[in-house]
Image (cartoon, rainbow, N blue to C red; front, side, top):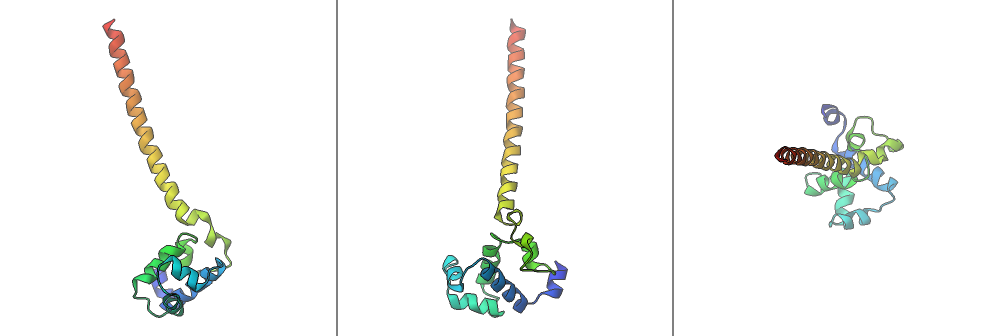
Length: 128
């Protein structure tokens, strides 16, 4: 992350937001409507102004649904790099991780239930 801080300033982040928005085929107004703000606010952030607003963070989160944050914030940002828009880097990664965690949790519970059932069946057999 230190590389990001040293190599990317607020004007560059605004430029990147604009490029991603355009590549996604969105207007400033459409993004503003999604984030419940004004087109002017999106314009100012894309110019590198008004980055202290909560909307700057909201834009990062909004674009993280479509692009790799590592790519968006990284030193070697390239709007033409198709991996920037890979679903592996967007919200799907978070969803996959959560689904894997849920699966692992339930497989563990299922194994515990299986062991408990086996113990009860063994105890019942021993009673006979």
